[in-house]
View (cartoon, rainbow, N blue to C red):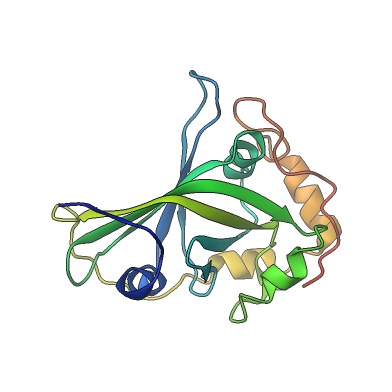
Length: 195
């Protein structure tokens, strides 16, 4: 049923890059900590950097659980499901890092996302994940669903923000600077945008 891959290439890479939606899962080290599962969309906000490294853009939102968990322990799983075509699920288990806007690597990473205007979405970081285990499995129970289009609500909401107003927005949210479990989240004030 399932197969383990040594790298993300060929058919596997093509499948991953074609999906309009993927999910991220992280958790703190604490046994009673909160497991976080987040959907990620927006065409062009995910890239395969090399055969073992992927990245996605982390946009403004109402919490920063993924960032907090990555800062604490780096563990992350990404998952893609085929909602059309052959039934397939792909998971990348690995170590992730949030590369923030003031990191010297940020401009080079951001250049890998040419189809995204970062000013429209309150870009906080680029999350880079180094794969440690890549597996697929059947998606026999995943329903067929049709992809319509990306929603424009996120872009419309955050396009009107600048760095100062984004920082104020993030400070107004309870779980941006600190996670649900009290871990350090998004560092504020938000560094100036270099994109």
